[in-house]
Image (tube, rainbow, N blue to C red; front, side, top):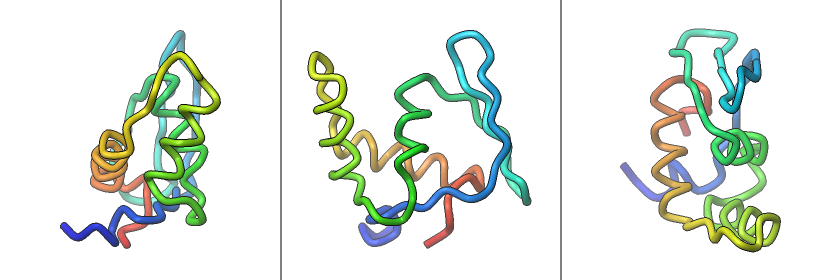
Length: 90
C-alpha cells in the first residue's frame, strides 16, 4: 500500500442506517456491509476526496476537543473501509 491510496479518501454511494450507537453502511455497488461507531461515521462523512487523513484527524480533534484523533488511526480505518468497497480504490 502506498500513502497516496489513503491520501484523500472519497466515499462511494452507500445506504446508511443508524442502529443504536452504531452505523450500518452498505455500499450501493459491490462490497461488504460495515458497522462503525460514531467516530467512524464522522470519518466517513469527511471522506469527500478533498481532505487527507491527517486533515480529517485534525478536524475531528478540533470538533471533539477532549478526544484527540490520530491521523495514522484514520489512515488505518480508511484502508479497512476501502477493502469493504465503501471508499474509492485510489
